[in-house]
Image (cartoon, rainbow, N blue to C red):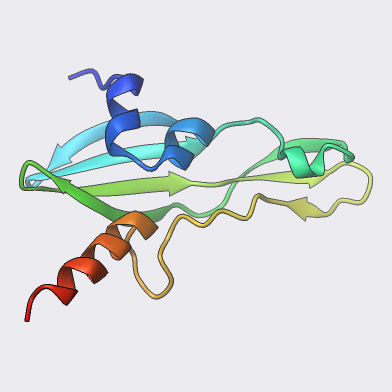
Length: 119
């Protein structure tokens, strides 16, 4: 099963389809698992530095909107860079996970609104 980037743009947060590459996907126990790695492009806010790619942070797993009754889990690996001059580690500050949850910001907001109508 080949997943098209055009299709993913309709169902995933824009930050994922713009700044991350889908490296693999699979179905496990009725859930769709999508694996992303941050692209190697250096952060625009750090253009004044000479940065070299320096691996990835530990993978995080967040739950997104279910699709056709199947749970969707996003496995995200954020990249880190090393400032060649100072040796300082640099990373982008992503707002991918809703505070206090393991869900995407959009999914958590949807559930919050939905909870208001459950009375």
